Structure formats: structure tokens, C-alpha cells
Image 1 (cartoon, helix red, strand yellow):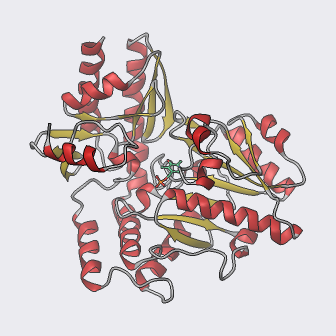
Image 2 (cartoon, rainbow, N blue to C red):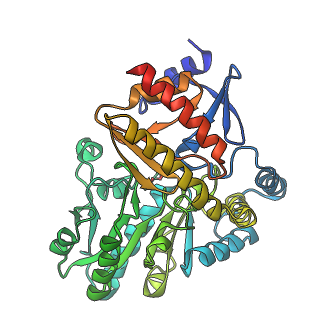
Image 3 (cartoon, rainbow, N blue to C red):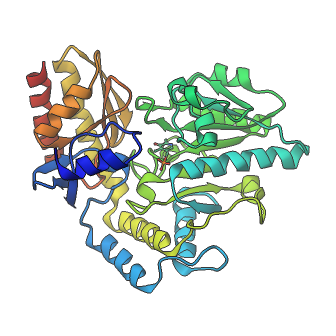
Amino acid sequence: MNNTIKTAEACFLNTYNRYPLVIDQGKGVYLYDDAEKKYLDFAAGIGVFALGYDNAAYNNALKQQVDKIIHTSNLFYNKPSADAAEKFAKVSGMEKVFFTNSGTEAIEGAIKLARKYYFKKNGTAEGEIIAMKHSFHGRSMGALAVTGQPKYQEAFGPMIPNIKFAEFNNLESVKAEINEKTCAILLETVQGEGGLYPATEAFLTGVEALCKENGLLLMLDEIQCGMGRVGEMFAYQAYGVMPDVIASAKALGCGIPVGAFAARGEAADVLEPGDHGTTYGFNPLAGAAVNAVLDIYEQKKLVEHVKEVSQYLEEKLDSLVTKYTWISERRGKGLMQGLELDHPANKYIIKAQELGLIIVTAGANVIRFLPPLVIEKEHVDEMIGILECCLTEVE
Ligand SMILES: *Cc1c(COP(=O)(O)O)cnc(C)c1O
């Protein structure tokens, strides 16, 4: 066995079934393993590395910041994180932001904000949050409690209380869970882990209206579907919906661990000094990463590019649905796509690796495509070529 794999298997807590592949380097949309085998990357580190791997502007921005200062703590100010906050507000329509170190922590922050929102209004700490079935929001106790998948929760109870679950894309089921204690509705604009389900326009605008009528916070998890992935900077912008709170991460730092929760209007004034904190969050290195990412998105017109290239990807995936009777459906939005099979997908993922393509699953039967946002049509063609080999060879 490869030495790195041996060491890792001996030393890591056994929380993952990893593929036997040691990634050593990345260049553009390609990865290289420790034997210098090349892979076309249609997973981007699970939707993280939007810019492609050897982006000089991004790398240089980080290198310069490393040589200046990496960390200061939140007892002081630093310019990179202040600038990043200003840029983030501009592209998201939010007013105030809190940078975290992960998506999970962004969700934790949003949950705390919602609870405090209720507390400020009612003087008691019993606010309820409505989340969705088949959602995924992270693995900490708060984020897990709003993740509507029993398989993740089962062994770790009791969950934090006052969380209700409704059916995604079923407005009546959301309505049915609203009562006088409800303070917020939380959902992924496009469900990722749960199987690549975009919210329907009627559902999302309906939830927005319910929130307005009932004085609830609309909180959107844009951790996977945000940051240009679906052809808008944030997925809710494709619906003309304006949330009160959003959570971001994944491509926000493009590899530097950084997430954010952000708020506008009344929600932006809920948290006060002492309510929340982080040692690493807002650190200058993370700030430099977010600045570089947002600048490069703008310079490269990356969101426009996604709109174009994702249409081509959709066409190509649709042609596979037509061709193979056992591929039941293509789902998703932009460069966040899934093919649902009528049987488990993992054997194709493994075969694809053999043939030099990285793809991942979303649930057992769905092949998920989350390429770097900089892919071109030729990469789509290359991916489809390899994928078809997998589909026919494995069958
Ligand atoms: C990945 C993800 C999370 C968790 O983010 P981490 O950075 O892994 O903590 C939460 N919500 C969604 C929708 C995600 O895709």
C-alpha cells in the first residue's frame, strides 16, 4: 500500500471511506497524484476551488499576505478583512458580515442570530427554526440539528430543540409548521448533498412571502450553491428573492478555510458585543483570500462564464439521459449538476478515477458534477468522453 495512505489510515480517526488516491498537485482544472497521473477535476474539492488550481493572482495575494501578517485576533482591526467584508456586502446585498472558518460555523452563527432575534422580540429563549427534510448544513451539534437527514443525526442525540422540518419545495408543509414561536426558516437555495434539488421559484418566493407576513427571518444556506456556482453570484439572485441572513463558505476562500454569515435589515442589528466570537475568523490571510477571490471573479467575469458553459454542460448531460435508459434524470442549476441513476453510482466514480476523471456522488444514486468555475467547453467534452467510457465499461 502507498505509504501516505498507510500513515493516514493508521493515524486519522476513521470518519471517511477515502478513495485510494494521494493528490499531490493541481494545475488549472487538472489534479495530479503522487505518481504524476493526471485527472480532470469535476469536483473542485467539493465545490471549493472555483478559480482553478494555479491561479497566479490568487496565489500571489496569499503569498504577499503571508509575508506581512497571517493572524491578528479580533481584538484589533485589519485591512484585508475589512475590505473583504465591504466587497462581500456589495455582491450579496447583505449589510453586515461575520467571517467564520467553515460553512458549518456560518450555519451555527445563523442559528444563534435567529434565536437571539426571537429573544429580543419576546424576552424568552424558545424561538423555533423551520428547516427542510433532505437538507445538509454541517456536522456540529447546531448544524446537525437543522440537517434533515436521520442517518447523520441518529447516533448523536439529543439534538438541540425547537427545530421543525418541512418538505423542500412544498410550501403548504412549511406553512403547517409555522406557529407563534417560529423565528426563522432555513433552507439551501439549491440542495446539494441531499441530491441536487433547486428550489422552485414558486416555493422560494412563497417562503419569502411567508417570512414577510409572519415576521420570520429567511435564512439561505448558499455554502455550496453560492459564489457563482449557479450562474449568479448567489443562487437567490436567480429567483429575485432577498433573504435576511445568508451562510457562505466553500468557494468563498477558494481553499483558505473561510465561511461567512451575513445579514441585512433588522437581522443585521441582532447580535451585540459578547454574543459571538472566533479566534481565527476575520484573520488577514482569510481576508486576503476573500479579496483575491472576489476581485478575480469580477476581472474574469466568472459568473457570466458559468452561465455560458453550464448551458453546454446541461445539454451534454441531457443527451446522456436520453441515451441511457437507466439514467433517470438530470437535476441541478449552473455548474452544480447531478445525474440520478436507477442504481448506486459509486462504481462509476471509481472507474472514472481509473480513467483520469474526478467526480463525486450526492446520496447513493446521484453522480454530482461541481467543476471549477473556470472550465471551458472542451473540458466538458473531455469529461463526457471519459464518463461515457465509465458508463459503458461498468455496465
Ligand atoms: C459543505 C456544506 C456545509 C458545511 O460546510 P463546511 O465548510 O464543510 O463546514 C453546509 N451547508 C452546505 C449546503 C454545504 O454544502
